[in-house]
Length: 107
Image (tube, rainbow, N blue to C red; front, side, top):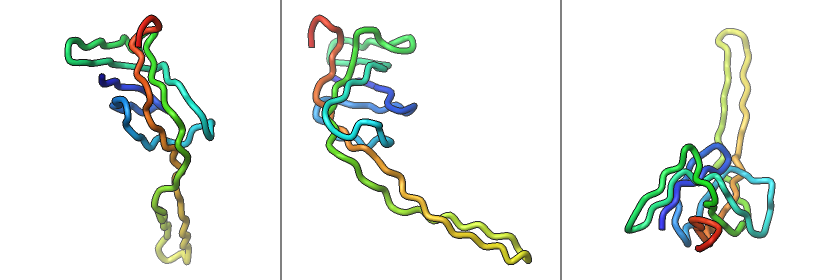
């Protein structure tokens, strides 16, 4: 079963067992559930939400956090002796998808 889920203003195509790197979440460890499911699909039929599907959710385990590669930002203004270098590393949360639930009655 496939699902498109919204996590932190971004949309991800997931299936059971996938590992995702998403923007940093407030939770640091444990299980987490996302109820903003936009689409559910299996071999037989596809359900599309308007904008979200009711009673559908995706459950995941939080594996930890990691940092991306450093990005250097360089600013300068010509003939003004203004130079500024700044670095940035985004922190990501690693999720492992455990279950995709189509409705509250069955999984």
